[in-house]
Image 1 (tube, rainbow over the protein chains, first blue to last red):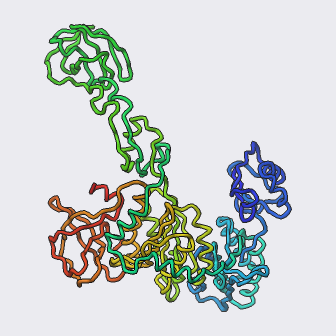
Image 2 (image 1 turned 135 degrees about the horizontal axis):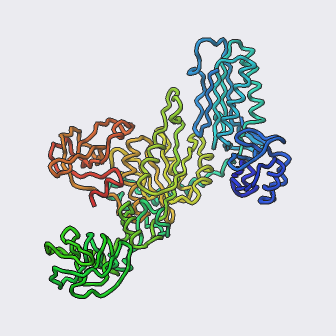
Image 3 (image 1 turned 90 degrees about the vertical axis):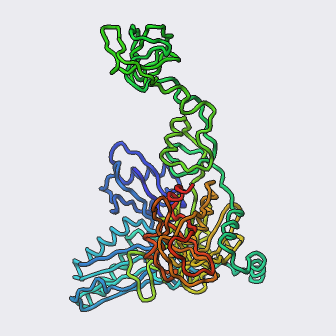
Length: 79
Length: 549
């Protein structure tokens, strides 16, 4: 499963995406743990960045599985 | 509700007219502009980034949700991405509603929600770079740039002499399509590697008159059964099978009668029906020389030779910047005084003959400082930098200043050719840069005689050159003091290349480009060219150019 990074999270991780493998669907907490394991610097952004799954913001009931389009969305500032 | 959403790197054309159907009683619009100050600092531009697929999806959902509450008829949202100079629009929102209260509520709520949920970010603010030391700058230009325009031939040879092939790289053969070979490919063994049969039949000694043979073995296509054949012996062989030893020929199976393990040859033919070992190439022979473009057939040859990672030209990294605030994207409707940007697409297409990676971006013309900041950050490791000027006055100076700022040494800034005279060429180490005149036809002309020369040179291929042909028809034209590269079509008749010029009136013409496949060279100070006259032409397609090698 590919997790895309945007805006300053690209600077934090030094890349624009991370490949995460999950054997079975995981919730948002588990996803964060997997991401922080790969990119420890992300830990400090967990409180502010939201997670999107297939263009929708995730909540505690969301499950992430192989094939999903996942992205970390730091606070937006468009307009 | 009618919805239009655009995320664009080009200036926003505000307006909602296209979406209106007459039912509206109010049109409410909001234009968000980049301010000259960000967090207390003076800036020249902001850079926006988006997660475009999600942003568009979220905007659409938001518009639909608001429409169901506020009952609006149409909405158009355009958000600019990339570098947006101070004073330009970053966002436009237009709402058509039956009554003003609905429209105003819709607009206010949309903007609030956009700033919470739509994945678009202000990525960074660009500061205003320090001004150039003016005096120094003027001296440099006077010293280097020839004051007179170069001739076409002089410009092409200037380009040749200031560029050199980039170092070759080894790539997997499957990724080498269109690359230029940069080493000799040597046959490491004979091909075919062994004598093999070209027929289904019976292998016998060439000195055996027959006609009776004892069949002593059978060899299939992939079989390998060496043995010395005696007189009177035959081996059953399939097409492509390796012969058991040298000095044999194959009697076709149609020419024998077989009874048990004996065959009787009915008719004896001269043909040996054998591809001899080393018949096609011998070990040590050069199969393909450097400078060849690896097309399908060449790739097949390299595969046969076991050359799985040939040394080839690298993919060219090309950065292309367009300047011109009059330009809008092809999917936008130009406002008064605006035109659609065709050059970005033209350059993309022209580069197809050369394996490359292309970065395209737009530079704000009215704010040179922001443009220079952007170009410096995007030019990265590009081998070739192309800058397409706008049609407006002053872009040439901007291009020249930009190239100087990026560290390029300007070699020439004018070529005596029509169209395309204001062509700038600069070099910096192994890199080359062009400032191309913005009009599409001029762009196309400059690409073929100048940019293609650099691209060929960097890859190690032979550059574009002129070929002889004849005028298919009479071309009426006034004598002009410059050479003309005239868009034309190439035809063949009775074995001769005929050139049929296409009509054009201005360097802004683009219609003729759809049909043109060569550039006719019309000498300076000559008027009408008669049908049948011997002329020269430049192929306008890398694949077409191969025909004339």
